[in-house]
Structures are given as structure tokens and as C-alpha cells.
Image (cartoon, rainbow, N blue to C red; front, side, top):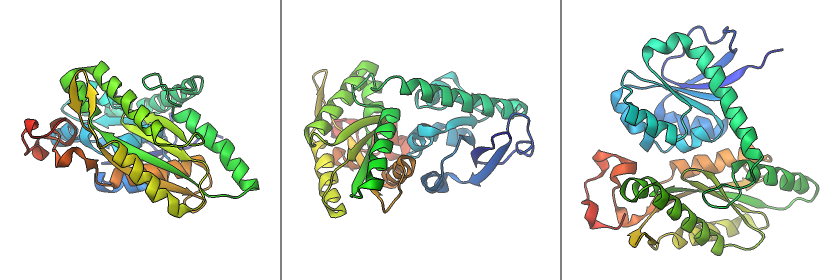
Length: 305
């Protein structure tokens, strides 16, 4: 029996997907505004977006993009595909970009993108750490959580997963270079690790996302204090190539067992909250790279970036 691939579409649903030999695909349609909530509730094999020129320019700034690319193969169809924008999307984790005239090849491209995503996930499992930070990667964190959750089924006890979405890496990369952005990521990792117990696990689960597994907590009411401490620890600027660089942080939490009893459910819950939350930090500084031109009313020199 063939696998039915779960597809989230932002825009029209092509008529031939359900019966395609490359599928079949079961499509769920939604809007940009509703996508984060849908990703929060369900895992998808692929996300298909039909974007006009303005939407395409804003996609790298879309908070839910980090959530979408975490597990799903993301494909974008747009009439305006400059090489610069396409490269930015690929760097952000998008699997493929297509022009409308290539839509007849969509079922094949969707299936191949899903297969590539699965192969990439398998390859990452072979490497226990994120090379840029030295932290456990997404696959390693999920594996560790799965083992721990199995133990919790036999010996119930509360635990929590905290997801921290960081704004600032794209700015550092644009102004100071890619390696400077990697230096900033490593410094963020060190600061997070310094504020936790030895039993807690810090992982890098995306280009701008970190996760903290609080494996042993006395009560769920202890978690907000830990989250506040972690967010506050990142408010002081970081020194990168002799310049002060600030970041903003949005946080989300998944509690076991209230929000789920498997690793994927807890990750979706925490990621959904972090994506929807307002970022804290950078003294209200509107970031030109990560929030778009309309948000950049402040002068770039008005606050450290």
C-alpha cells in the first residue's frame, strides 16, 4: 500500500495531486496567518506556497518559516524568482523554488523534495552534533527525548521543552559575514549552557532556533522562571569581531504530559508558541534584514545590531 503524503498548501491546491503516481498527496489548505497554528497541530511531509512578488520578498522574514522547514520539505512557486532571493530561501531551508510554468512538474518535485528531506534527516542522525555550535542537533534531541519519554511512561514525572527563536543572525551575517554569524551562534549557545543545570540539554534545532530540554523539574510552575532567566541571559550584547551585537528572543514551551507524550508533539507545541510570540530584546530596534523595510523606522545606528 502506497504512502499518502501530508501536504500543507498556502494558495491553490492543484487538482492532480490526490491521484498522482508520485503521491498520493492529501492536501490541507490554509493562509499565511493560519499556517503556524496548523503546523502546531499536525506534522506535514511538505509545505507548498504560491506567492506573489511582495509575498516572496517577505518570506525570509516570515516567523513560521523556521517551524515549517524543521520537518517538512518546503517548496515555493512564484512568478518573480531572482537568483538572490532564491539563494536566500535555500539558505533558510526551502527545498525548491519554481516558476508557474513549471507547475506541471509539481507532483514529481514534491515527492523528490520529500525524499531529499528524509535522506537529510537520516544523514543528520549519523552526526550527533550541530557543527556550527557543538550542541546536539535536532535529530539527536528528538532521540534523547524519545528515550526519556519512554522512561516517563514507567516513572511519571513532569518535564518540559523550551524553544527559543533568535533574531539577529541574519543581521550579523549581512553586516559582518557568515563566519561572524556562526561566532554569534556559538556565543549564544555558550551563554544558554552556562545558565542551566548539568541534567538539562541545550540543542541547536535550526538556523535561528535553540531548544532546551528540562528533563527534571519539580513542578510545571518552575518553568516560567527558567524561561525568564534564559531570555534575560541573552539581553546583554555579544562581542563579535570587536562590535557589540544584540539579539531578540521569543520563547515557547511544551509541557509533558499536558501538551503531548511524544517528542514530535512537544516540539510542535513549543515551536508554535515561540513562532507566535513577540520577540524580547534589542531595545525595540527594528531590524532591516529580519523584519523588513516597513519595520525599519528606527535608524540603524540608534541601537546595537
